[in-house]
Length: 111
Length: 115
Image 1 (cartoon, rainbow over the protein chains, first blue to last red):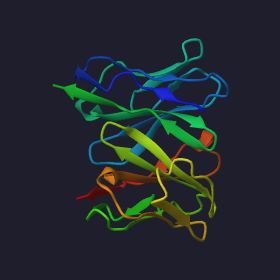
Image 2 (image 1 turned 90 degrees about the vertical axis):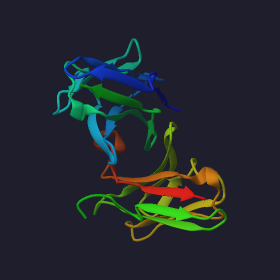
Image 3 (image 1 turned 180 degrees about the vertical axis):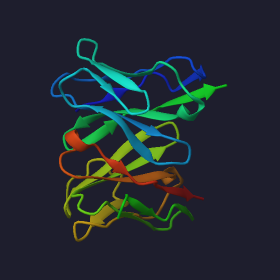
Image 4 (image 1 turned 90 degrees about the horizontal axis):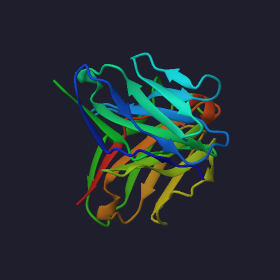
């Protein structure tokens, strides 16, 4: 079975600073990876996904994630965060017909 | 509908009572999933429906939990004889086609509190 590990439960960062949220997956065989975001009091929304091809995937709000097969990682990055990026971020991997999620990382952006 | 709809949004119930949680997926989405989100626990998979059948119900934590889907659309998650450890946010998601391509669309969840 596939699994993902999010090493950081909380990441505090100042506004306009860069941030990296870490995610490691368990297997390199036919890996499909996703990042979801959950803003306060809202449902989960798809942020970006890696299916194949280019190892760098981007979202519309400035986040990007890089698929690294040798390190079995899919870390999420943003060069400059905003207060509005405060949310919980979940990494997920396809396992059979479902997605398996990590425990989540709470990103707290401070002014 | 335009999105995945879940009802009720909040439910407080007494220990030992039965509860039913409802999910209306996006029209035409053949796949439907239930997850449970507990504080600090991430998302725990419960059950997956393809049409009206459930090929994967491996995540249901006990026989007190059951789910059904009718007409390839609405799904109901039933918890019998609720316990305090059942308190969580129950999330429903639906998907059109293969999950590896589409990912999920989530509902806003039902927050269940067992007192």
